[in-house]
Image: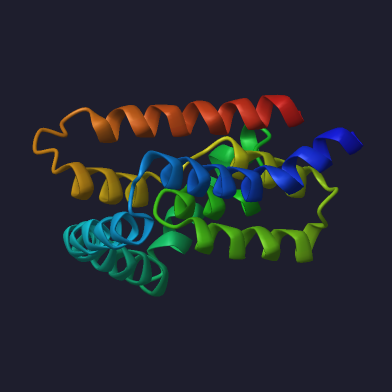
Length: 172
């Protein structure tokens, strides 16, 4: 175990020094390459920024309009019938849009039920088994400029459902 900690602690500094030494020995101007990469990053940010702003606005509207509470209230009896704890339902829906908001809900679950409870362990495992669909789509579709995204959302929702079911089955 100490060996893995040692590798993880020193791998990034070694990699950085390796890149610098390799670039110098190859005759590459490190500063010019760095500034060129930074210029490309600004172009990428310009393309992605509108998608991220729209996403943040949608998450805010979803939470503040109490639509999340209504949706989880409707599905809570069905979830409880199959043994899925209702306090974890808001986490499942908000994770689709925002990982940071989902982490906030995870902390609330920890405060209410405890991290070692069924709800706490399920919520923790669920966050590891799922991806923030809307954020990822906004980044990838904005960066790559994909125009035909017909099946991306469906595939992402299916994988999210599979992750949710897998987390539930692993904890049960």
